[in-house]
Length: 262
Image (cartoon, rainbow, N blue to C red):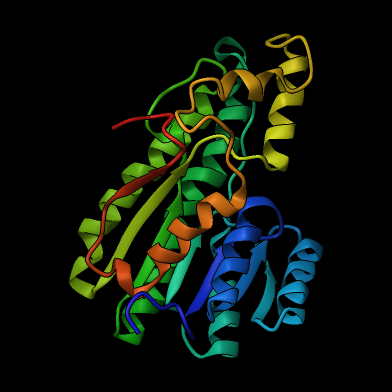
């Protein structure tokens, strides 16, 4: 049926916690067969088991998204179990609160390796599989409001998320002829474990002076008046994985409550 993800085979990287877990869970509730991929194998297995106990179809796989051989092995395992690959979510990512002048080469390279190179490799290997299958597919990348504006204490993270938007557009233009669409979505402030980490780092650097100050100040200009939770995002992500989005490619969909207007 139109708009359905039923029986689609979907990999979600970074699905062992936070937003990735919510994305995978909503897909499974709507009938997709999901692969929970995460660098933390235990977390991935736990999420997959929760989905199965709720009546969904899921498997887990451990993967470092910056390692091409691990990405190849992940896709091979999913295809072996489910028979094909229809959708890849390049969702795995890391962040860091760090003043511009304190960002080191190691900081920059670490974030770009996961957030930028990981999207490139994931896209390449998924596209290779989809072309071999011969019936198209979808790549969906997780960007951020940081992929549209630069913030002083997140220079390297913003650079990596601008890279996600750029890779999305380049891939959309490269693979449309194979009926493969490539889009990304950009959350704003999402109440997950990641923001707790960023809040702690802001305190350590003296950027803020009290707990939760960072998220409170970042959220002050959200037009809808509150931070988001993962369930605010999954309507968009499941839509992008569904047949209803077949005529959309190369786009960045803001899901930020009105933080960045473009």
